[in-house]
Image 1 (cartoon, one colour):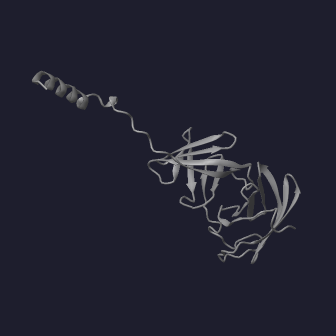
Image 2 (cartoon, helix red, strand yellow):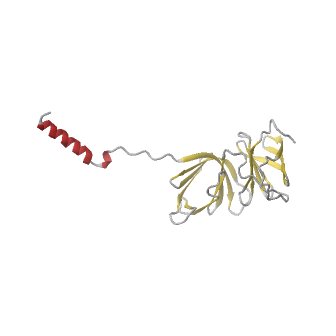
Image 3 (tube, helix red, strand yellow):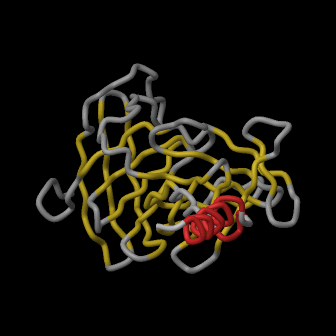
Length: 221
């Protein structure tokens, strides 16, 4: 290569190295962590859910996105000055509770509380003997004895017992194959599609039981 062509090549290389950074390809942002979940909605001051349905829960760089099956989407951005506090699209305060739980989190806005539950992959996560009708607080890893009877397409009678824990009532279809019922102390949620039964404290959201039960192949009332 003669000197003239060599100098031209060096000039081209220098221009490529010192040219505008905008010419470089943009880096692809990291994928958000997204899980399939179920969302229960409680109007402020109420102990009964106004809605319960499948949803997706995403968290990316601290930003939270909750997208319901019916298309309604919540987006919360972290408050840089307060831990577990977020701001919604309108700038309203959103408080996160039970952060780090392997099974659920709670987001409380000025109008409602959003309970987000996901499958932790462990049917005995946080089991406890707490329950209605004078339950006891001794932790238990035992799957409770469960009986079911379908009353009609939208209602299931259920009985759950384990130690001093007792629940006997009806579960009503809320959406899809999700059935929900409760008494004054516990809420029982059953997804006929996944066969998952979840029992929680209606006030604190603490999970008592989380297990698989088939109302077709197992106990019937």
